[in-house]
Length: 160
Image 1 (spheres, rainbow, N blue to C red):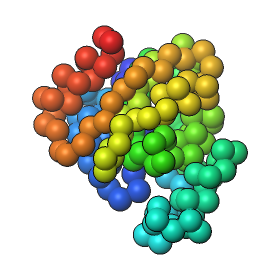
Image 2: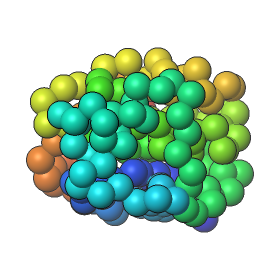
Image 3: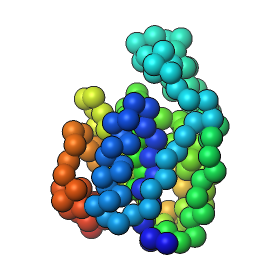
């Protein structure tokens, strides 16, 4: 088993492409974080205050159920956690994933795709959810960075 894992949630496929390339560039294992109830395009309409994503993100206690069990984290030292930025932070499905695993002693590196914002408060929020782990500042990986650029970004993120 690899000592590195790339775990990601992708609502539209954008984050999935980056996660797959990052895993290939770093030789990491790959894990897709899937909600038990998949998101529809109507659910993702952030302009509609009654959409599922809007309702979830307005409730700090919301933890959408996972469709798949998280992998055993024992063999991993570094976990890259990818997601689309929602309301300047990570979607609550990421919080569900983080709280379902023991990250003690591990390094967590957030990465995101975004239509226009940075990671916002995501690293700080994630740190609060993974006691005993070190959450790095991570970064936004928009577009389709080459595997060489992703490998360089990953090593730089770990050295920071």
